[in-house]
Length: 393
View 1 (cartoon, rainbow, N blue to C red):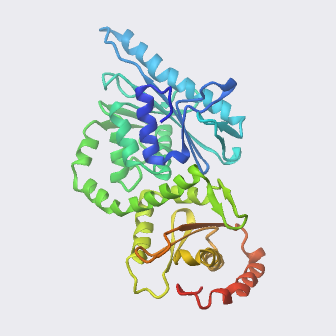
View 2: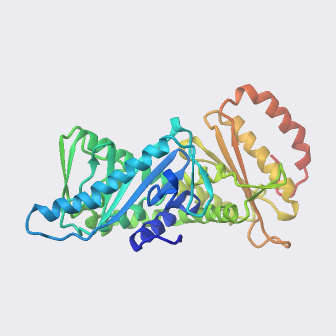
View 3: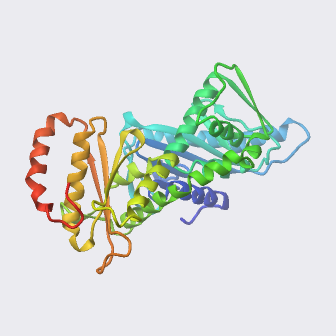
């Protein structure tokens, strides 16, 4: 955890890293004139989440003075920081982390920005205020909604999809929280299959008991049980991420370390429900030694395909090449899929020289123009794996 953060900033950074991992969570990034840009910046794929944290103790003055003062210092100043950070990012292609590492930003035309104000200290003595606060929509989290939002929406895609739907909702209707906050809106969203059932309502009043009822319900228990295996996928992302942040990942084509994270981004963009399906598929082949060809293909979020291959580390170079070829075959056979990520590893308990994992990333938007060339390349190398123990393509 970086130095110089106050307690509330450390808390927000901690839950952000738990949800989105360190590779994409950047506390106290540097902005204009080497000053702090915002309290936390999350960048993954095309998504940029700007977070500003303010902890201001609310003092009840018996009239609107204390109320207005808290909103000004805790919410309005936070919103101002968010908009300032956004303006700076609009003219930047990269930024510098607190530890001096430079991070590239997605192309300007592809960026999807979300503004999160973490405004603490009122303890629900003041109604939650979210919406267009002057220069774009700001989502306000308080002590009660913060953990719920980051806890239940602990993937990049789930997180931004929820806030995108909230932005659409509050752009079309006046949303009033009756003693509650964003966590109650989240419960409605999850209970209605990741959507809001309000139609063309001009005003929506959100009761403060919805979230509490949700986490005590069978729906919540079912959701937690259904997603249990999905955290295997999180562990796999963390394994590759730790390698990348420590010494880089070894690139077999250049024989040099690389900081390329494209494959990891596709892994991280998988929502929780998709992760459960992907993890279940991967775990299944790991636990079935009787499978003659230990390989599996699964279609995932946004038409991304994942290819899993089991092979021994002592044949690692051959395993890497076979994995790449399998990914090319999948791309050729599935025209709606542009991106294929391949993951190869040893079957548990089988290696006598240690264990390793490999990852392959293929992005070919226009397959048809390169089809003949790729097929020839595949046919040329098929014989190379014909007698491999773990099967051939």
